[in-house]
Each structure stands twice: as C-alpha cells, then as structure tokens.
Image (cartoon, rainbow, N blue to C red; front, top):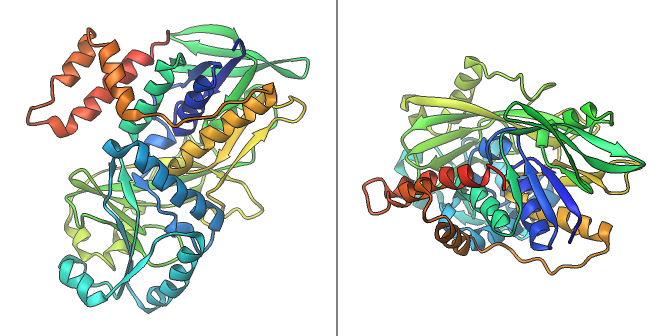
Length: 419
C-alpha cells in the first residue's frame, strides 16, 4: 500500500499499532522522543493484570484485562512469569469487601478462588497478618523485552522506527493531516503522512496543542513505585479493597516493587516524588506485610498514566479502559489514544489498525506476532552485528537470565536508527 502512517510514541500502544498496520501492508513510521518503552509503558509496576483489581468498580476494564492477560501470555511466554496473585485482607473491613470482590470477578469471567486462611498462612508464614485470602491469575511481565520484541516484529515487516526523534507538531492541510515536523539529532525534518496516530499517552494533549488543535480529554495521573531489596513472596500481593494507594506488592527479578499512588498532575514532565510519599506507602503496606519495614529501599520511580478525563477529578475513580479519538473535521486522519493500561496495549494497537483500515476501505485478517519467531529471525538477519553478537554471547554464562535485557538493548539500538 502507498498510504503512509505515522505513529507517535513507541510505548506498548504505539508498537502494537505499528505492528498491526505494517502487517496490513501500510508504510509505517514510528517516532519517539526517547528509547522504545521509555515512557509510561516502561515505568509501571510490571503486573500483567487479571482484571481483578478493577472488577468491582470498572467492569469494562476488568474484562479487557483478563482477555488480554490470556492472549499476551500465549504470545509472550518468554517474558511472562506466571506468579499468580493473592488478594489479602488486613482487617475486618477488607475481609468483608472480599465477598463483593469474589462476586464481581466471577461476573466478568476472572478465575478467583478462596484459599482457607489457615492453609495460606501455613504456606506463607511471612504473611501471617492476613485474615482472608483469594487467588487470582495475576502475572508479572518484563516490559522492556516484550515491547522491544513487538517493535522488532513491526521492523521485520518494514516499519521504520525512529527513536530519539521528537515530534514538534502535526501539519494540517485542507481538513486532513499533511505530515509531521520532528527533531532528530539536532536537525528539524518535515515528512508527509496520510494518517497520524497520537499514542503518546499523558503527553497526547501537548502535541495537539502545539499543532493548534484542542487537547485530548486526558487526565495525567502520577503513580510512584518503590523498589525494595529482596522478595516477600513469589506471588503478587493485592490488598483486599477498592483500588487505592500502596495496595500492590510485586516480585520482580530479586526485588519487590511496591505500588502505587495516584495524583493528578498538570505537567507530566514536572512531577517529582517526595520522601513522604515513599514512607506513607511503606507504612500502609506494612499493616499487612510487616517485613517490608526492614527491607532496604533500593530506589523509587514514577509513571504518569493517561487516564480518561471524566466529570470526576479523582484519579482512582477514573476508568482504566481506553478510547480512540478522531480530531473533529479531520476525517480520521488524526487518531489519539486516551486511557488504557499496559495489559490492554495489544488491544489498543489492534483497534487503531482496524480504525485506519476502515478509513481507507481496506480489509486485513490481523494476526498476532510470533515473538519467538521474531527473535530468531532478527538474530539471523543481524548475526554479523557486533552488538547482537555480544548479547547472544551472554547465553550459557552465569548471567544468562539477564541476557534478554542485553539483547533488547541491542535490538532497540539497531531498529531505532531508522531505515
């Protein structure tokens, strides 16, 4: 196809949109001001959601999550750790909430099982403060390796991926998109495109504003994650209550990640966590897991979520589902993604591609990427590249478990340079 599609943002939404569009035969270019997966997608807590966390207050998002949990696990088993998850009650109120949680999960098709508390504590003596326990199919996913492998799939289909290339504005002409102006290596370039997909998450409004357009209804919500040295549990721990601050403890490599907070911010680039935020989160989770008070804090980080702006200004009550919005008067030549989660990024990309195909009147039977095949094909194509050779050379060594990250860096370095 001769139609040229620009995707702004190389997070999970953007790379899946690029993959499905390239699979459908379009000429696709991805732009990101940083590396692949360097924004919100690479800064969350690492959970591949079962949807249970949202079952009681956001059934649409919960249903999306459990469906995508299963689908991503099938295509990305090398990047997913099937840890399982538990919802644990620390007090009577949380224990009572368990009945509501159980019914809501069953209603949207999420497997949830009550575990007798005596049995749970016998198997998890470090969590003896728990008063009630329910098992759900939460999992852990290694974000960077996964997202880079999807980007590599798009690259092998012909997509041009330009990292460290910041889009300055979207050019318009006669009621449609005309192209982009972007900065790369200190130089300004202009390039023509037929459709632009704005997949920049919490920054989506900024790009539109710089282009003279109205902002998207996005509510940037900052969430802080605390990395603790050591593991409390081999499974994900959730507080048995409505989504709130400091209610997730997740095993990631040899560490534990405690998350998260939710604070609406005006500028996604200007948020800075405070020491009090970290202390508050640790104190809250310590009611259930006292051991975390003695675990060294290795570091902390944050992400800014692109929540859908509703009448409520409460980041906790905002939907975790997503919308694909068309700019008024531009006839679907400019699409912006608002909302969503890492777990639903594949679904977002698929629906973006379907929307573009409808615009051009084309049809394609979309197929998910075979990421195992992608890595093998990529290694074969670039076997002479010294960066790939170095990363592959770590296999069979003491650090083999971490070789995947080295290879992801290598792949990103190669494909991020553009064609």
